[in-house]
Image (cartoon, rainbow, N blue to C red; front, side, top):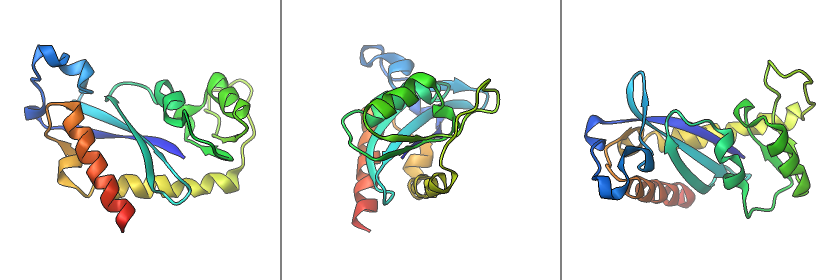
Length: 162
């Protein structure tokens, strides 16, 4: 399963030194509400985290889809409408898995998907809720993405241990 969530970045998270790459490489994006970061997550069948990818808040989900599933073997790949792309679904089926991704409403030829299996996506939504219980996650204070990603790893370890 894979999904993404947006977290607001505190104003003090801005201002990384130019030699560290600036805002774009530190996964800080501009939105109407200020700075934001998008956390892309892949979880296993029990809702335990497997991989995190950080991007600026305005980036689309489908751009990170192939990187999220790379290197994993699975029978079913569950994602939301943000991951609906012919190329991505084809990549999933070529790896031997079944894509359980609902089609976007504006799609000319809607695809079929397993609605019963799609209901299992509540596990990743519950995981997103769990990580947002940590103040340092739901309001990003870290200037550098590696610091924020390190704390995400720490939170993931805590969730694995529960």
